[in-house]
Amino acid sequence: MKKKIFTRPVTLVLNEEIFEQIKQITDSKDISISEWVRKAIDRELFQKKEGGGEMKEQTPVATPALTVERLHDSDLLKEYLDYLKSKLKKNQAGDYCCPSSTSINAFNCWDNTEEFCKEKRLDSKTVVYLFTVDFGCESNVANSLNLDAFRSRIQKLWKGR
Image 1 (tube, rainbow, N blue to C red):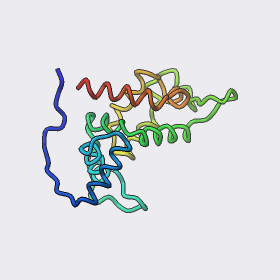
Image 2 (tube, one colour):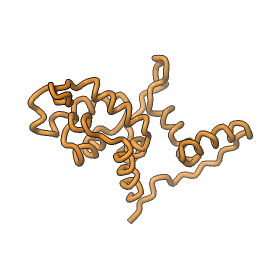
Image 3 (cartoon, rainbow, N blue to C red):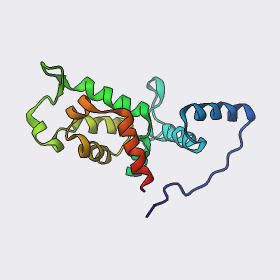
Image 4 (cartoon, rainbow, N blue to C red):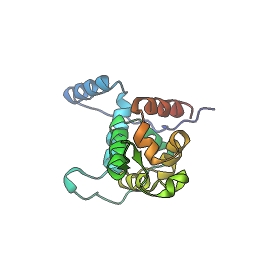
C-alpha cells in the first residue's frame, strides 16, 4: 500500500520573474516545482550555511523518509562518493580498500558514512542500509557505485512507499 509522505499543502504567491527562474531550473533538472521548494526548505533547515556561518539553531537529524528523498539529489550522491574516496586508500591494483581488517564484517566499516551523514544531517542507519544491500562495505561503494543506477533505485524505492 502506498503511504503518503507529503500531506501538508502550501500555497505560495511569487512574482512572475521569480516564478520563471524557478520554472527554468525545474525544467532543466526535470523535477517538479514542489520538489524544488522542498529541497530549498531542506537546505535551510538541515544543511550548514555557506561560508562557514553558524546554523540558526540546532536541527534534528533527518527522518529516514527525508533521508531517502535527499538521496535523489545527484549532487549529494556525488559529494558522498567523493567524500568516501577521500577517506579510503587505494591498493596496488588501484582499487579503494578499507584501511583495516573490518571489511570482513561490512557493518563495522561504515564509520566514514556515519560521519558524512552526521555532517549532512542524514539518518545514517538508512544510508548504511541502502548501500550495504548492494555493496557490502564502503570500499565497494567507492569502487563501483554507478550514480545514475543508484539514483534510479532510490526513485523506485521512493515510489513504493
